[in-house]
Length: 416
Image (tube, rainbow, N blue to C red):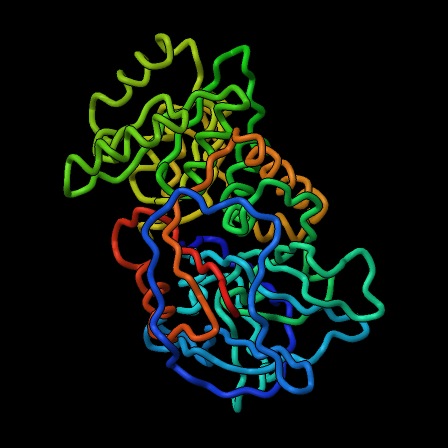
């Protein structure tokens, strides 16, 4: 999703050599939507090595900004054996997030690294910001990382839509316990769940004894689903706003899905902007005796004002996205007379400033997942093998732009 925040960061680098650009390889099955994949702590795959021990790897790469279908190519290159401070990785699962698309389009604050280290004739960047990889080998100077460890990327811009990568440990966070976790669960936990986690705790402290509420739009998003579950665990009640589907049955299905996750109220954006909305909120909150203290916004536009107007004094509106690309206008009366604060939050910037907290947050999310207190986001898996055609992979990325989806797109790596 596009963010209103404008902070540019240098992405971490990864290494490689010797390559060719290609937009073809064999067709792959596009798996049906599944809520999860089988738990495992090891992945076995045929390794494609040259006579000199170089890993043969492929990546969805681009040399200029634009629409994914126009600029992405399947790029082949090789990675030498790990030495000194280097770690060689094989990716297990890499999601396709809206922010990844924005980055390819050149409209996202965090820019990818265009590098010649991939062996292409011109500077090339690899798509994808989130994912989990397995350590294949480490150089002689590497400490605390071993073959078989799972790792996630410390910061965005690494380029996770690839079969293999080589980098240094300062760009990685090691998963200390992968027991009873699947690659998809770990690979999708770094951004959306951590975003919800920090917004719920860092702006207003929930008070279970007072039955506090929060309200959010984009409730069916990855962040929204995470906020519903985490908020419930921490004593929050929630009002959740979704976009109405063209098919009314589909709208009801989405509402019921969120209610099953722990949502207290689920309404459409039209209902949230109706004249009856404030009186309905009073009814839901025990005549207003229970307070709505936090609003989470990833949409923007007039809807945010409707949300802000039902907040209690000294509450906060936190914007973490702008899917409608419409600005948030801040009513002066809410600021002056109700002390409503309007804040922005970008988890990438927060993680860069608080790396230890980020690691602890991720560890807690994974522990909750392991305990089945936090449910996987629904996913639509695209299997990526060494022979997979570039057209299939690019289609999976481009499909993220097409309307409502029944699951987050995720590349799941097989025989690479």
